[in-house]
Image (cartoon, rainbow, N blue to C red):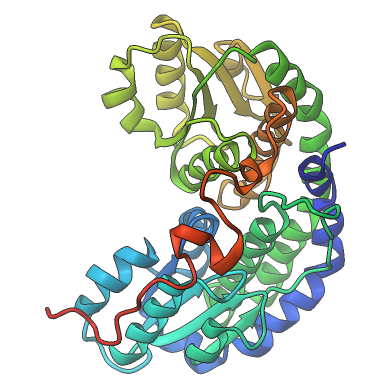
Length: 384
């Protein structure tokens, strides 16, 4: 079992072992005043952190009743922060997400949000990091360590799940304080999240072997497309990112509707295309897109639950997820098939994770030439 697959299998224990401490941290850190005053929430981060932000939008709006705008840290800091609504103290809340706490653009976003008068919250696993020191409030998503084998750097799986869990627990806290949820409602929702440990286990067991077989049978493929919408648009982006990190293959994450407007005309006919569905809102369009993809010759994988027979029958292959999971929480399980496929794809083509940081890449200085941690930061917001 490679280290990425091992981390996927560790996720149920991650939920079980860290749930209560994370929930207590959020309840103790998000004050009543902060929850009651917020009128608009901005979620920002880079890479996996941004994908988690995208996936949490539906949960914040449907459970916490707060309008949410998920933005990349670059988009927020360089273009958005200068135009925050002038609605009074405590009304704009900005959550900057960074596991390491050292991503320059996220630090910049939090700092400029402070200057704009927003309430800022860092979601990080690293006490004493720059985002911790810059934000007015910090939520620590520190989880039980799961060390990589010596000399191996594994694409992020556990940290992504921990961030999603923390964001969902935040929605329950805010909804309860605002009076949108009764104490019983909040307890029931927390119970749903706890039970996702079982749903993750079921999903991993049902999709592991099919993902491995797909990686072997599609060894000839040289690009991959993941398609999702709503809370799983971020899952599509995240799954494509895991392919890039694990095997180095070109991969694209795309909104379900945008696929029909663009990918339909691509010349690479047999490109494996993964369609992610976990609810009913996008089901009719997912069926149409799956039919279109099959018609033009795509190899189609459906990531959905087994009860979704209409969509499942269209695909060449099915990567099953557990049934009965609330759509707003579904990204915790819908990411698993893509993670497993990416891990096995790397095995099949004998490519080390992150391409072993060859060709000018480096793990030093937060990404070597990419300057993730050492990028120049704006000290003042761009002019309006």
